Length: 243
Image 1: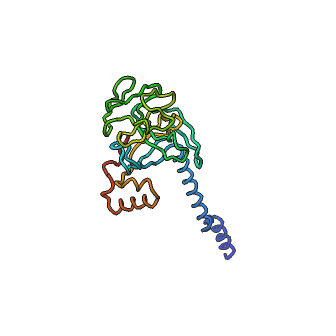
Image 2: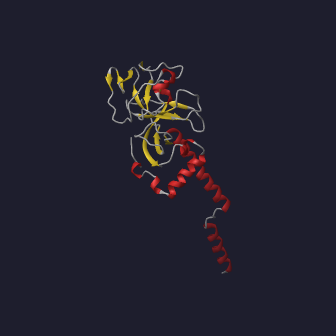
Image 3: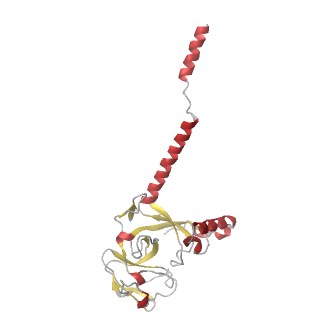
């Protein structure tokens, strides 16, 4: 009887699966989070990214402190962990908002967000406080203030200003806040290869000054902390607005 009991005990022990050790569990958890993080970085670099509006150049369409989800689909594909990117097949339409690398100042410049005004081959002129495309006044119900051409002394040396004909594969862009936007009026057109995406939606909007988004990370942290303590600083009505 004792022998039979011992055999049954050995069979039960053999059938019972071995539980992983604590070290194995920790290793498995770390590996799982590693793959999740890698997938996020790949998606963030190739399909979409988050952006925050740091200035008032696009008011009142976009406000300082608006947080955007940007889509890169069809426009640009970035290589994760590098600064390399490849232009894709989509081209922006007139009056569409785009995000792009500025065609001046070197690779360290922050991305800009403006509205496409002139398409390749368009003749662009500014007069009487309005934009004229191919001899016809462009109807714009999104602008703040009149549209004025800058003085010659305000132009970059390589740019002669308007009127101009937009070169092939380039776009003339402007901010909606025409009195407070450093745009194609001052430095020329944006090459198609510099366009990286277009905004999809506002996922957060915090009413804070420009310094919160242009300065040190500590300033941004304080802006978020104030928004948590004072929810009234969040522009709730702007959340989930789409473009």
